[in-house]
Image 1 (cartoon, rainbow, N blue to C red):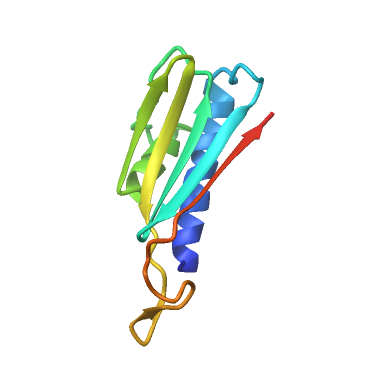
Image 2 (spheres, rainbow, N blue to C red):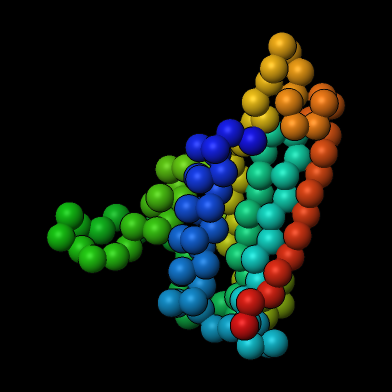
Length: 125
């Protein structure tokens, strides 16, 4: 993937993880979950936690505000983002465009098809 696309994905995960740690309850296990999946030139990143009293939403802070910009950054960088609720688990996810560089019309990392799918889940706690 292009380095800039990786940087964007890392920033989005950082913002989602920061929000989970600051505003939400932990998962029943006491931690939070982080997952990502890359397929066909897109990466979906997700952070799961035990939910909060309020729904995650992009804020519109004033220029002098010290915080409140995280989901605005996610909204700007991602093609789409949203919130899923599954029982006591809340997951905030974002999809970013992450194409592979091409060399002479071929994907340089995988040799071509673009159908590679990578998934991971890591629980932090």
